[in-house]
Amino acid sequence: MRIPDPTMPRVRISGRVAGPDDPTREARARLLYLLFAGGWDIENANGDQNITLSNVERTIIASDAFVFTPGATLEELFKAVSVFVGYQTLDANLKGKPTVLLNGDGSWGPFLGLLDHLNRMGTIKQDHREFLLVASQPEAVVESLIRVREEGLPDAGRHHPEHDAPMPARLESFEAPLPGGHVGNVCVFCSASIEDEAYLADGYTLGAELAAANLGCVSGAGRTGVMGAVVRGSVDAGGWTGGSNVPHIIELEGLPDGLSSFWLRPDIYTRMEVMIERSDSFVIFPGGAGTVQELFALLLLKSENHPSMRGKPVVIFDREDSGLGRFWTPLIELVGAASCEADFRVVNALGDIVPAILEEMQK
Image 1: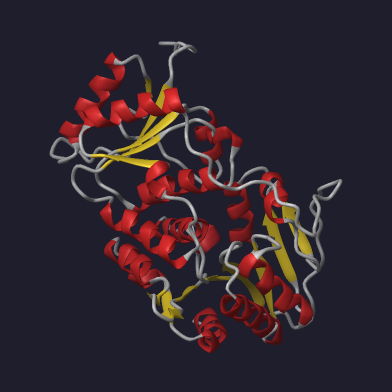
Image 2: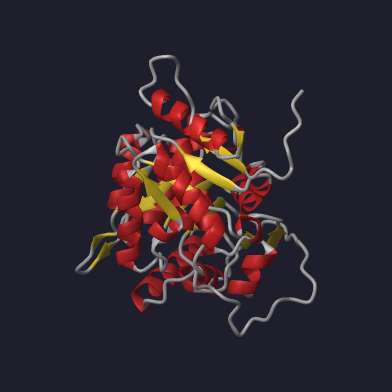
């Protein structure tokens, strides 16, 4: 058995080969040749390795670079946005590691257009082109990998701020029992960076409405943005709140006050796992790349008939933003193209979210 040379940079190739007639096969073969000739150790050359929420971070740690091949499936979209979220949240395991999208077939275009849309909406602050490099030919992929390894990646623009909730001296999970009359838990995936007062007010209202309906509120346990507002709304209305977060993000965003239960996890993927397991339904509220990542994860699990998502509805709040259009329309079109329309429900009004959740949970 060949033992990889530890001095060789290791690049992970994403994407699957769908047989001898796969139109991406030729580009992949050319890419593999150029990488091997350039001294790279290649992981997943045959495109047959499975990635799950529980092993994404281990895969990131074991790799020095990432290349996504043509044919942007839902699984590949999830992995690509996960790497981008890692850059945004200052994941130390991604420091200096380049990512390139080989987009000769244009299949990555709608995804890149979604990131542009969220940049205009203000929930993505970074220019994704500086982190997810796009190449049309395999030769350009190799050039990009070499350049980033020599020059490094740009600063993501996030630092540890002096917020009013300092990092707890000791971080531990804790658990409180669910209250009497409890109907179920609703996980709200949303932005921790939006500062627009109208969005914050919507988040607070949703939290309060969940509590009024005896629905627990599960979140990413962030103190800032819409995420913090949703938790405050539920807490102030006497609701049960649970959440999960990781140490390096807690340093960025703090922990909200009043959580009934908190599940500390080592990375954002196992964080998603526990939030999904502890929830009975999900709301996709206005957010950024992290919220996109979370929706992709839900839809992937549904497509696999995974036990953690069986019978659990997903509601997308496609909020109207004056002058900028509806918030999630490009995302809805993207996942609709992946034939996922039956796996979620769209509402356009804040007051329709909780009734839609209750209706879906009774099916």
